[in-house]
Length: 144
Image 1: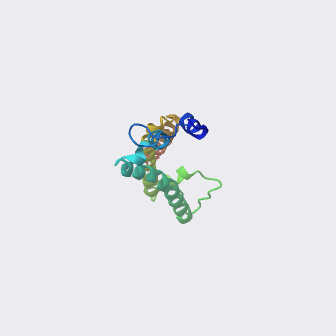
Image 2: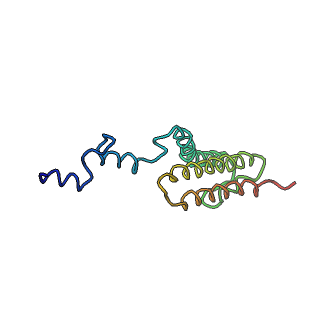
Image 3: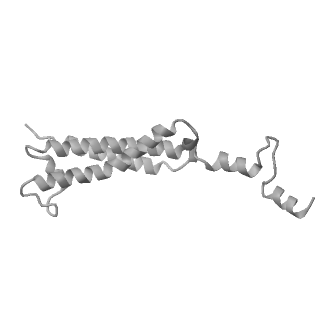
């Protein structure tokens, strides 16, 4: 064998029995996440897009609600105080929608990381944040 053939063989180059160079087969099988290779990628990408939408939607909702509310000072009052009063339903709806979008994002994140054997802490913490938003919606319901 010539020196460059020995080097190629040592680095995993050359053709295997399938006719596909060994290095290329390794790259396709080991480093390309499964969600990029399956039809489930549309579902996963949609769930991940929910997380992209959730944050800006929540910020826009409380900024608009805070701007239209008399005597609301964002430096003094928490965002959850917008859930009280006659027009508090808009902030409660914002908590609900954002919580559901974040929950969908946590599921999508788990689907995206599963083929890579990624950590479970990210999706778990995002899901916990979603549950917190949903409970903020439930705890800010007016008492009658």
